[in-house]
Image (cartoon, rainbow, N blue to C red; front, top):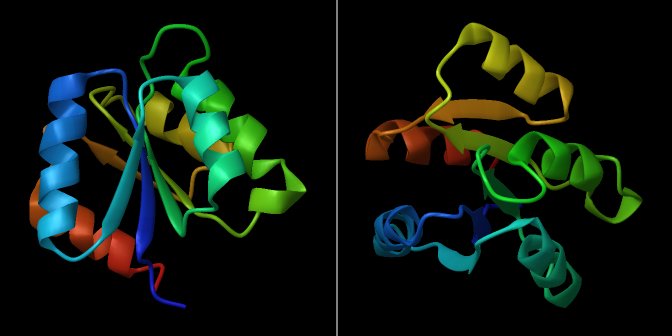
Length: 121
């Protein structure tokens, strides 16, 4: 099933705007959340085809949120791509161990992001 609906989780309004615009122009339906609580609310409203997850956020961080989502039976089939400025190999390994299926470092290269998303189609 092709990826169409993406949930974008990031505490930066600038980043949300930038990534939403980038993905919308490429035909994706994007919903946004600025923190873990809002992300869980959005997931309850509508199940996305994919989640783009920031790591550094107030409250529940992206690693914790990814772990909670990927261990929830309702969302085990929803791939999570970590999308963060944390560029250390240890961060990537930890993100994947929390359940993320891929990892991309900010600033995001639009073509790289879209190819990572299409890999799940």
